[in-house]
Length: 209
Image 1 (cartoon, rainbow, N blue to C red):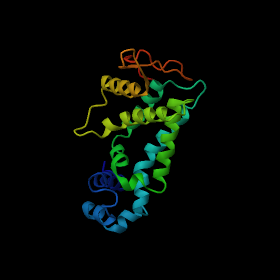
Image 2: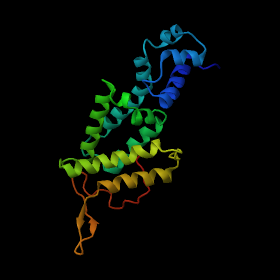
Image 3: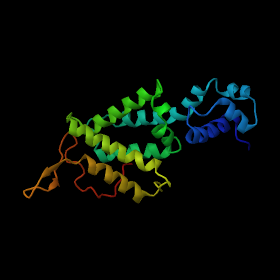
Image 4: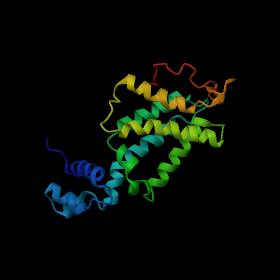
């Protein structure tokens, strides 16, 4: 069965946006590559902005759902939250590099603020009730540790559960504050909070359901 035109357009647009950037890709470029008129593109997408939302919104909606599902009492453990977040990002991995690397997308008037809000909510879930700068820095590092491997070149195999465990362990490690030992060397400190102990057995292979 032939792929529907709206999907062909979206698939090509994502590929072109990732190579040439959102700003550097025009509707005329897409029409020429597909061998159709610009009117044929506009029949399915009234603007390039509409096309961008078609690509990005499913990921943002899934992140919102992940946050909603984990805004619970009692709160999730960091491992549960980061595991669920990673699962969402892997499911939408084709879009992650566009969001992570395209400045025009990051600064988009609706997409940018939405990403910022999601980051704030995730950070709060990871660190609450600690609102210190140190806690924020650790949470930002943990979220970055989840995102960065998804855009690595050459691509990393993150469908492998062992690799997922390793990535989550690395992100969790950044959440662990350190304290000086008697000889001056930093040693990990036990982090407590609303989640209780934060994954003391940090090498546990268990991922959330």
